[in-house]
Image (tube, rainbow, N blue to C red):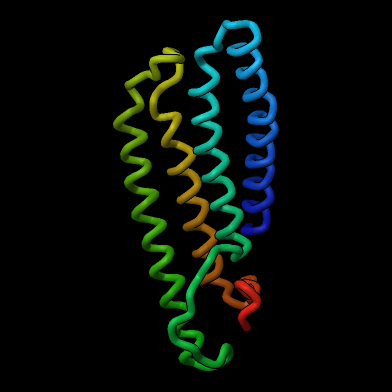
Length: 163
């Protein structure tokens, strides 16, 4: 399930990037060449930026590409290592769950408001991608908790050539 979520989120982020690459030059040409700015482009780009960021956060969570700091080191297969990993996943899942709850609450509160540049679009369009992304990240963490052997381990990264 986690791989499917990551692939869909990657597809969404790629689509957002393609639309960005099209809309921004069109807006620049319209404003500076034709002196006729398109008012809704900035709002759509802001929504796409939120959607792009949320989708890439889902990909990073599903594929363990996010940055983490290991403060306590345990042997990976040991009991303490498994308990430590389980506790970290629980804390991360709870944090994502709280963020999903508050993003969902914010989206519901702003659902009746509209964006000034696009009156037919509710203001909650800025917040729904965040709520959905956090729910998908919770599902990814739950899959790691239920099937710990299936999880992908994060890659070791060297910063500045330091081992």
